[in-house]
Image (cartoon, rainbow, N blue to C red; front, side, top):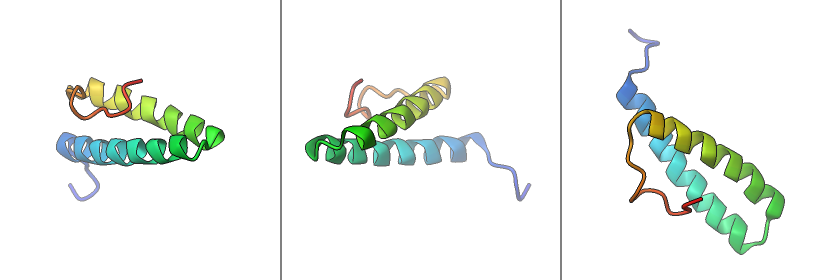
Amino acid sequence: MGDCVNGAEIMKNAMDEFKDIQEYMVIAREENAVKTYAKLRKKYFYLKALLNSLGVNLTDLDEIKE
């Protein structure tokens, strides 16, 4: 079981990453870093889709709301 990652670990990691990506997106928007924001936005949508598929309600967690 050493290499096995369970659903709870996947969900926690994705939620942590989702939180971080949102923080970076806010900074990129404030700095008008258009290319950086666009790259972060792609990852944001990927993580959002993953979390939705895992049944995570993003209503309160999603600060960007795109």
